[in-house]
Image (cartoon, rainbow over all chains, first blue to last red; front, side):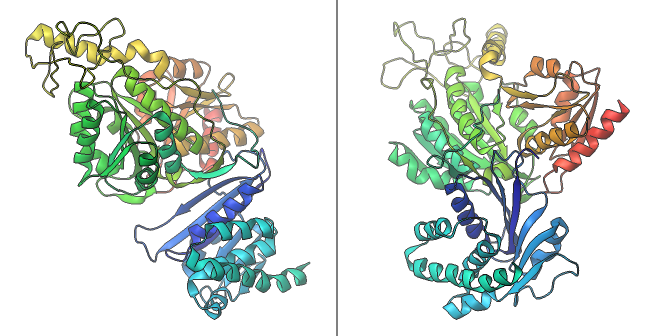
Length: 184
Length: 386
């Protein structure tokens, strides 16, 4: 590999805002000078069906823009497990929603079941599950600086969702911080 | 041929999708008219241009369908402005009659075709490379066609600009062809403002009385009449002589058709573009475009790391195919591998050009892109057998 390469996926169903999360994280990484390729697959329907947003992050130019094996996998629906699980690295970090993706295949892959969607519901809108997940992923992986993602969420959110998104991001961090502390 | 920056400065690095880069390239090239009809996975081009084109002094029209969009583009170009449409699979099929008209009447314009799974409605959100032959031979009759096949976000920007330049210089429709993966993926790029002066149309000049709209000089390209300049002209889809009027006179037809069909040969050096990576000592040369070429680039690295001598030839100009460059790149190769997202199209052209070589295809049409590992494995096997 010409450059250190990190690959990650937000996997779930269409309409969950996975591509938005992917684009926000990609923007945050780009603002830190990282090279990023962000891709997605989705179904022709606007809601439902397997959907994913993938990121390839490197210090140099990304030669092949699609992921080969994931370092990080965020699962927001059980539908995403089957197509994503065979492509994770043995030491990958998996974050799965407690309610929407309760069961994961056996194995030694590090995984964290977090109440992402429940946290979003408690904040008042399940639609920000994607932002809670984004906060949790960054807190657990340290893939980018908190200020970088906050800047992107601040500038990239529609006005009606700005405060909610910032709260969701903070809630994601809060969910993951004790997990990260326990792991270190 | 590799123009890619190796480093990104924090201030200029921007995350951009292929379709956004196409829209930006159109504006940078001086496009002043877009007519289209939304279709996945090309819609983002129109979505971007609906705001950016009017800001650049241009006009955006969403037409009632793809056929009329192509017709509107032809009309706008005849009206004197650089014009473009963008579509995908089924829409590209609908445009074919008017694309043939633009080729025959020699109307400069740019058509973007983002390939998705086919035939028919096929798979709207899945990648394909099955329109390779359609871009060349989609309309009826003999006609020349320029097709550019970028394989990255940056290259979509650059090739869209080049498409407008070539359309004007060669007075012909130019197709920009790429797949759903490249279209809808985003990459961090720092796009450079286009270098040099953009090509402008060769307008008719000189005495109006002697003007013949389809009389060409040694460059094979007739000057177009600028509306309002007072040149009497006639434009038709019927086979026409130098005066622009229909003819079935065998000599006039043969002369007109010969010039039309061969005019690109006179500008081949300008039109042809390709990238050859590590072909000099390659036992196996991979020939690929678009996302398959990106996978192949990685496959070359995988093979080289294991001591297997593999190279990549990537036609950036797909049609007219860079024939001599391919033959040169494959001179020392014992086998050639063509990975593509179809049942076998690019392979046919490679076979035609490399008669004595062993040419094998790696064809995938499941809607999933071919991976670097698949290509590396096949290239390794070929190298061991060759």
